[in-house]
Length: 311
Image 1: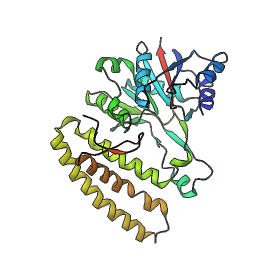
Image 2: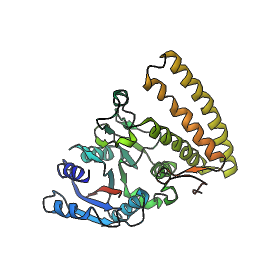
Image 3: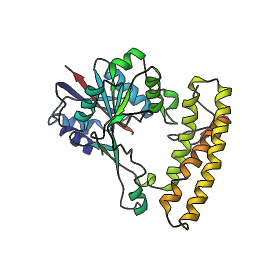
């Protein structure tokens, strides 16, 4: 997958008036990506850098990228299981130039394995569907994003390593940016495409992901509250979502006679988030990138990052 990503980055339409470098940050202690990167260096259209991050987890990879981009004006992230449309980076930079936002987000479109059920393909539930160019009320993830490094440096922002195994550290990062009054925006023109592994193209994986969303949502909401107040809010919000989600599931099942899987399974989003919030309320957590339900830890994967320095 990394080779396909590098191939797509090599074909990028460069942003105007920008010097662009591409960095691959390898989270494999054996340096498994190095030979591939070395092979591409000679034919790459931009400077191609390779560095290793030995601390496990994508959070550490992202923080490594922040350090690498310390002297850059802009930093864009793209994951190693994605590949970019030719206009991807130029569209992100163009939206930044138009808005001077703290961060810009683009859509991530899913490519499913052949074994994926047709109803899931049509639902395209794994995608980040951005179909309008406009400002955002809520942050996006970092898998297709560009950030103003002047803002990052001014605020001293990093990705919280305590969320490395749970996930959601990128959402918290951009919420912290928004808390300080910086604008968040999006563009429909900066598309990337993600290969969905077979083990993620399953309902069970979606339920676990939505359950984790509930935990991290409760955690992020609590950043301005005492833990006692945060847990009380999480318990009430979670219980309400469980009740509403159960009613929605029952209603969708009856309305479709149990035949429309998309209509039924989509209602589990509310239910699963509710259970996640209740888990947080009672002191539990979930390591999506670990292996267990745990006590809360908050208060090779190969990461590819593209950085743009404006001249």
